[in-house]
Length: 112
Image 1 (cartoon, one colour):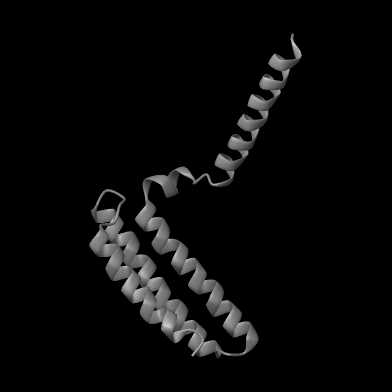
Image 2 (cartoon, helix red, strand yellow; image 1 turned 60 degrees about the horizontal axis):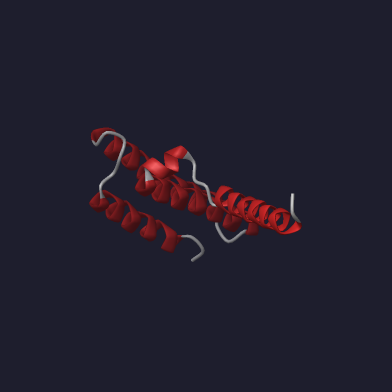
């Protein structure tokens, strides 16, 4: 094999390896791909639960406050599941907006 051809082949393989690594790093799960609205809502709920635990650990929230916030998040999660069950596993844009408004209200209560 000639040196120029070898260099071109090595360059092409290197570019392919970099491209493959970049695409696998940003890959979504199959569920996230098919249910982006639900994924966004559930990710927010998980983030809020982490924030509640952090505020509780730091002493900024009492046990009762943290419990009430978790109950509110659980209600939102159950509503998301119910909405999805009625619509073939998906939620509509309007349902996502409503759930996000409810999450915003709970979020404002965290860390006050």
